[in-house]
Length: 245
Image (tube, rainbow, N blue to C red; front, side):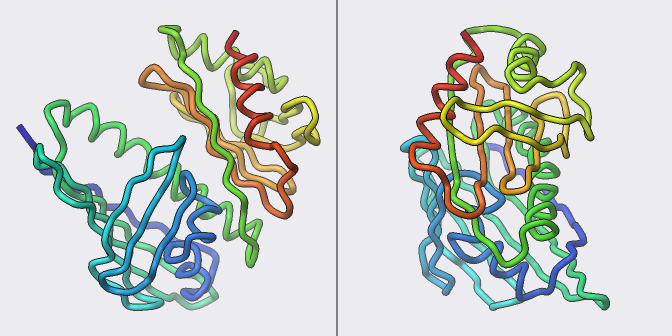
């Protein structure tokens, strides 16, 4: 049985409405703060697509008012499930913009767990958007994705393994310095800018890095600004596998 849901959030961003629009309504912009590799045709009836780990999810653009409003909706599945997203942009004095996000749709039998995961994830994603617009304005990133099973290990144990591999003290806290990363890539040198029970985010001079553990999987969604080193995704996949070994 499906169950309706709606999540609404609002955030103030240190950017113009035009900059926020570029971040939410273009593939390279979305690549710079959200998940996976993205494509978006910003017109009513256009396609919005996201690919993560070889899985591609498509939606249709249902509303497009450049600089003001963007809405998308996935197709309705055989089980009745679908998801819809709406972004509303409002300019403010002082080169600031208010972004309102509404994520709604129908979830499946395990709707409560799914809803809770979505509700917990959105504040982090909007924080990453703010980090992007604050520290990397006018730039776009190469997305890097890696995943590995947690093999039934509890979250605190997985988090400790990730922290050790990054020379991070426990508990992981905002402001802690990070040193480490895959062999063959420039070492990470940055700080933790987000930490909750399921994930932590790191900002360096040239990237935003997400380490997420939950639901039996450990996921990494990184955003590398400038030229990404060749083989970066494969290197991070090896790093993750070794960190969890």
